[in-house]
Figure 1 (tube, rainbow, N blue to C red):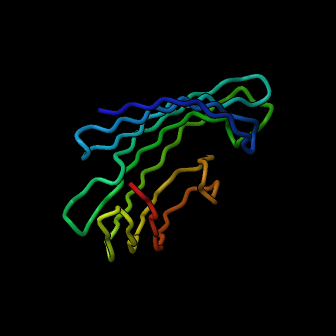
Figure 2 (cartoon, one colour):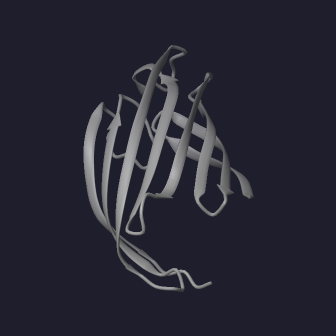
Amino acid sequence: MNISINTAYTMCPFGDFIDENIFIRYNQKYNVHAYLRQFENRNTWFMGGGLSLVDYQISSKFNTTVAAHLWNQPQSLDFNTTKSQFGGSGDILFKYIVLEHKSHNSMSLDLGLNYKTYGFLPEEVYLKEHFGARLGVTINLIQK
Protein backbone atom coordinates (compact mmCIF):
# COMPACT_ATOMS: atom_id res chain seq x y z
CA MET A 1 0.00 0.00 0.00
CA ASN A 2 1.24 3.49 -0.87
CA ILE A 3 -0.16 6.65 0.74
CA SER A 4 0.56 10.22 -0.27
CA ILE A 5 -0.79 13.37 1.39
CA ASN A 6 -0.60 16.97 0.22
CA THR A 7 -2.27 20.36 0.55
CA ALA A 8 -3.02 23.02 -2.04
CA TYR A 9 -4.20 26.62 -2.17
CA THR A 10 -5.96 28.23 -5.15
CA MET A 11 -7.97 31.33 -5.99
CA CYS A 12 -11.58 30.92 -7.17
CA PRO A 13 -14.33 33.26 -8.51
CA PHE A 14 -15.59 34.26 -5.05
CA GLY A 15 -12.33 34.14 -3.05
CA ASP A 16 -10.05 31.17 -2.50
CA PHE A 17 -9.89 27.60 -1.24
CA ILE A 18 -7.58 25.15 0.52
CA ASP A 19 -7.44 21.41 -0.22
CA GLU A 20 -6.19 18.51 1.89
CA ASN A 21 -5.64 15.50 -0.39
CA ILE A 22 -4.94 11.84 0.33
CA PHE A 23 -3.98 9.39 -2.40
CA ILE A 24 -4.06 5.67 -1.59
CA ARG A 25 -2.81 2.91 -3.86
CA TYR A 26 -3.65 -0.61 -2.75
CA ASN A 27 -2.58 -3.89 -4.42
CA GLN A 28 -1.53 -2.06 -7.62
CA LYS A 29 -5.24 -2.23 -8.56
CA TYR A 30 -7.05 0.38 -6.47
CA ASN A 31 -6.11 4.06 -6.72
CA VAL A 32 -8.28 6.21 -4.45
CA HIS A 33 -8.17 9.98 -4.13
CA ALA A 34 -10.11 11.72 -1.33
CA TYR A 35 -10.04 15.38 -0.40
CA LEU A 36 -11.49 17.96 1.96
CA ARG A 37 -11.85 21.53 0.71
CA GLN A 38 -12.42 24.77 2.59
CA PHE A 39 -13.79 27.62 0.45
CA GLU A 40 -13.52 31.18 1.72
CA ASN A 41 -15.12 34.38 0.51
CA ARG A 42 -14.66 37.72 2.27
CA ASN A 43 -15.47 36.59 5.84
CA THR A 44 -17.05 33.12 5.71
CA TRP A 45 -15.74 29.57 5.34
CA PHE A 46 -17.65 26.86 3.43
CA MET A 47 -16.87 23.11 3.28
CA GLY A 48 -16.55 20.67 0.40
CA GLY A 49 -15.01 17.33 -0.42
CA GLY A 50 -14.78 14.49 -2.88
CA LEU A 51 -13.87 10.89 -3.52
CA SER A 52 -12.50 9.23 -6.69
CA LEU A 53 -11.58 5.74 -7.85
CA VAL A 54 -8.85 6.45 -10.41
CA ASP A 55 -7.82 4.31 -13.41
CA TYR A 56 -9.63 1.19 -12.25
CA GLN A 57 -8.92 -1.63 -14.72
CA ILE A 58 -12.16 -3.19 -16.00
CA SER A 59 -10.36 -5.41 -18.54
CA SER A 60 -7.00 -5.47 -20.31
CA LYS A 61 -8.28 -2.79 -22.73
CA PHE A 62 -10.66 -0.71 -20.56
CA ASN A 63 -10.03 1.56 -17.55
CA THR A 64 -12.43 3.85 -15.75
CA THR A 65 -12.28 6.73 -13.29
CA VAL A 66 -15.35 7.56 -11.19
CA ALA A 67 -15.55 10.70 -9.04
CA ALA A 68 -18.06 12.44 -6.76
CA HIS A 69 -17.75 16.00 -5.43
CA LEU A 70 -19.95 17.80 -2.87
CA TRP A 71 -19.73 21.40 -1.73
CA ASN A 72 -21.29 24.19 0.23
CA GLN A 73 -20.40 27.52 -1.42
CA PRO A 74 -21.45 31.17 -1.09
CA GLN A 75 -24.93 31.75 -2.49
CA SER A 76 -24.67 33.04 -6.10
CA LEU A 77 -20.87 32.75 -5.67
CA ASP A 78 -20.98 36.13 -3.93
CA PHE A 79 -17.79 37.45 -2.31
CA ASN A 80 -19.66 39.27 0.47
CA THR A 81 -22.51 36.92 1.52
CA THR A 82 -22.66 34.66 4.56
CA LYS A 83 -25.47 32.57 3.00
CA SER A 84 -24.53 29.22 1.49
CA GLN A 85 -25.68 27.00 -1.35
CA PHE A 86 -25.22 23.22 -1.57
CA GLY A 87 -24.02 21.58 -4.80
CA GLY A 88 -22.26 18.61 -6.30
CA SER A 89 -20.86 16.88 -9.32
CA GLY A 90 -20.39 13.37 -10.63
CA ASP A 91 -17.88 12.26 -13.28
CA ILE A 92 -17.15 9.05 -15.10
CA LEU A 93 -14.31 8.54 -17.56
CA PHE A 94 -13.83 5.50 -19.78
CA LYS A 95 -10.44 4.81 -21.38
CA TYR A 96 -9.96 2.33 -24.23
CA ILE A 97 -6.27 1.35 -24.37
CA VAL A 98 -5.18 1.45 -28.02
CA LEU A 99 -1.43 0.89 -27.53
CA GLU A 100 0.49 -0.38 -24.52
CA HIS A 101 4.17 -1.19 -24.13
CA LYS A 102 6.06 -3.15 -21.43
CA SER A 103 7.67 0.09 -20.20
CA HIS A 104 4.13 1.29 -19.25
CA ASN A 105 3.93 3.72 -22.17
CA SER A 106 0.38 3.78 -23.49
CA MET A 107 -2.18 5.60 -25.59
CA SER A 108 -5.93 5.58 -24.93
CA LEU A 109 -9.11 6.96 -26.46
CA ASP A 110 -11.20 8.62 -23.74
CA LEU A 111 -14.89 9.33 -23.21
CA GLY A 112 -15.95 11.33 -20.15
CA LEU A 113 -19.41 12.22 -18.85
CA ASN A 114 -20.05 14.87 -16.21
CA TYR A 115 -23.02 16.37 -14.40
CA LYS A 116 -22.69 19.26 -11.97
CA THR A 117 -25.05 21.61 -10.20
CA TYR A 118 -24.56 25.37 -10.01
CA GLY A 119 -21.24 26.21 -8.37
CA PHE A 120 -17.49 26.32 -8.80
CA LEU A 121 -15.47 23.15 -9.44
CA PRO A 122 -11.77 23.37 -10.36
CA GLU A 123 -11.04 22.42 -13.99
CA GLU A 124 -14.73 22.74 -14.91
CA VAL A 125 -15.47 25.52 -17.41
CA TYR A 126 -19.11 26.14 -16.47
CA LEU A 127 -20.33 27.70 -13.22
CA LYS A 128 -24.00 26.99 -14.03
CA GLU A 129 -25.70 23.59 -13.86
CA HIS A 130 -24.21 21.51 -16.65
CA PHE A 131 -24.23 18.07 -18.24
CA GLY A 132 -21.31 17.45 -20.55
CA ALA A 133 -19.42 14.87 -22.55
CA ARG A 134 -15.74 14.91 -23.38
CA LEU A 135 -13.73 13.04 -26.00
CA GLY A 136 -9.96 12.86 -25.96
CA VAL A 137 -6.71 10.99 -26.32
CA THR A 138 -4.29 10.29 -23.47
CA ILE A 139 -0.62 9.51 -24.09
CA ASN A 140 1.42 8.23 -21.13
CA LEU A 141 5.20 8.27 -21.42
CA ILE A 142 6.46 6.54 -18.27
CA GLN A 143 9.86 4.89 -17.93
CA LYS A 144 10.22 2.31 -15.16
